[in-house]
Amino acid sequence: MSPSRSRPTPPNCRCSARPALPRRPPPCWYLILARRPSNEPSPNRPTTWTCCPACPRPAPTPTSADPPAAARLRDRLIDIVADTWTAAAAQAVPLADSLAIVLACYLLNGQPRPEDWGCYGRLQQFAPHLQTYLSQQISQRLNRPLRVTLLHDGQAAAMPFAGQAQTAVITFGTALGIGFPPASDNSQLTIDP
Image (cartoon, rainbow, N blue to C red):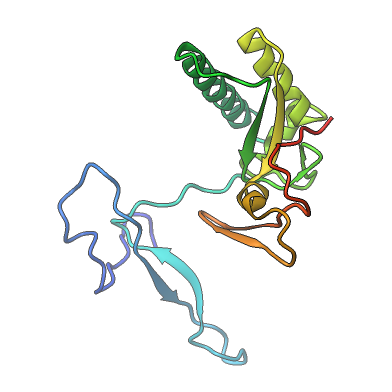
């Protein structure tokens, strides 16, 4: 289909019937059926999901190092942590010398897996050990020593179920994730060395 022609709106789509709202409406998805060669089974089997033209599109998933985008993400991550820390300190909130950052990224001892070049995985290009690197960068920014622990989002979601055998937590978001609780019920977050 040429870029100038828009896709037809499915009959059950309510996006185009609503006036523009300041908030983005949830996307409404519908199936596009693709023709298959006659020798393949299930010729009308759905092969792709497509979004209604009036609906917001999900962000594309990065699959490469993309150094400029990774640098913007790193800087924004450090900004958010530093700004939050500074705001809490200004309100006299007692702060510890360690913090956890939860990432939607599989981690091995504080470092994204080598094959993961997704949104957070591509942060691995800045240092051989991302957890140590972020500890140093955030400490420098705040002028105080801090220890950062990186946690996979599924692991963090499973922590309240610590000590429960044969348990898994499934997270739903832009992707499915899974986490397994630690074997013991330890209420203190342990910091990797």
